[in-house]
Image (cartoon, rainbow, N blue to C red; front, side):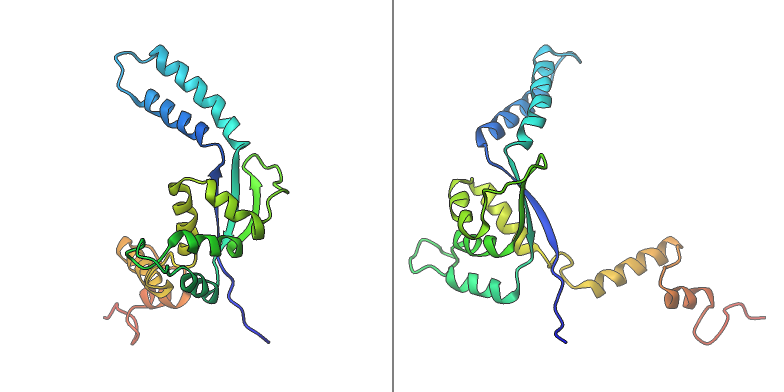
Length: 195
């Protein structure tokens, strides 16, 4: 029997109408600007437009579900992304990395309003989509793919120990039977309450 590793997944939303995103940014600044009155007419107008945009933006937002790539896929992408020129001082063309990893990491693509996005084929359409995205959007996709499976940093054992120390400090019992038993029964040699 072969053992396989279950890989984590994460969803990233990509707004495909950057002019709408610019309008949202402008309106956000307007409603956040200092004002002398609570019901500033400019803020009310901007807030109404933002409410309308909240529904509109779902129709132009892709909801992409990514799964962590395997170590082999990551290594191949990194090896293929070492540029032959001097334009990349760190030695890696990260755009090439995301071009290589995005198709392999894509689990599903749909519109944020819940409708199907049947016309997107991850194997052939990522290149054109990435070419039209902003630097920030490409970086967000790359960051999501690269970070999957690495959230705990030092590994789960370290975070489990941290959780136990927090529970001990708070006076709460751990849900782990062996850890709870050692606290409720005293030291391993017997009961703490000696006569």
